[in-house]
Amino acid sequence: MSTHSQCLRIFKMIGDLSHSHGITVEEACDKYGISRQVFIKDKNLIDELIYPGFISKEPVVGEKYFRYCIKKDGEIMKDTFLTQEEERQLMALISKEDPNDFSEIRKKLFMFSHNEVMKLANTLTHRVEIAYAIKHQKIINLIKYEAPFLNNIQDYKVEPIDLFDNNKRLYALDIEDNICKTFKIDRISSLTVTKDSVSHFDFYQPKFHDAFGWSCAESETLHVAFDMSRLAGNMLIENYPDTKAQRISVDNDQFPYRFKAEVARYQGVGRFVLSLPGHIDNIQDQDFLNYLQESKKKYLF
Image (cartoon, rainbow, N blue to C red):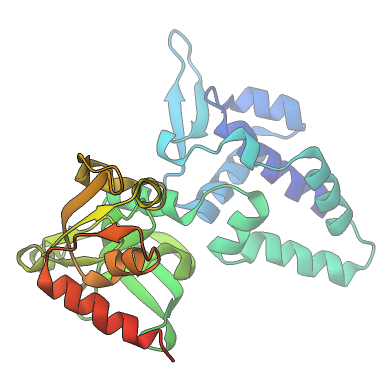
């Protein structure tokens, strides 16, 4: 069997498995012209490349056979998979005549890091993987995480606890030092979901996550309140959807909205306020006002 045919079959099979009805062994064998043993090997390979338990086996009511499909929390949307043009380009790429190219491409397709394989197949996002790990209480490896404040890039082995800030951030226990930390999803180069279960529950610390993407201990929240113009009020909801419950209407033609809430830090909400001069009024909390005044000075370089 040629390498390009094998690679293309794997990609197409992931697409078949992502459909709600999945695929049976017989259907796969008939569609791809393969044996039952080859199908099982392909299925196991996909399961290994994505994450453990990615593919489920469901009995067909009234029948003696099973349907294989991607678990609901890992389903792939039809419009995110390979198009015919992408298939054509992939086919052209991996069907080069040079044996060395063939070997190298095959190695990259089947031995790439978890993240690179997913990029090629357009299957899952980091958010879906992390949500799966949280639901099934599995340890994950964050590979080449970029931490600007620490000015470094390093790997982390963590127990995922929660996704917040519209699933843009992960709250997790760093197993190395048993400290709960926040990780931005877009700073994760790649990740793997392991088969190991979480176990360090005694080190989990309750956290408050505000609508602006910041966290703090539940006892350390900060109060903020201010009025907004119609433009600012709408931009608040558009950029920070979780603030909707804290935005209320008030009887003021110029500033018809008011925001009143607890936040973890002033940085997130402060950045919003400072970005809209003339559209924010009646800032009541003095500590927050002091923070804004100090921050404003930094803009005058």
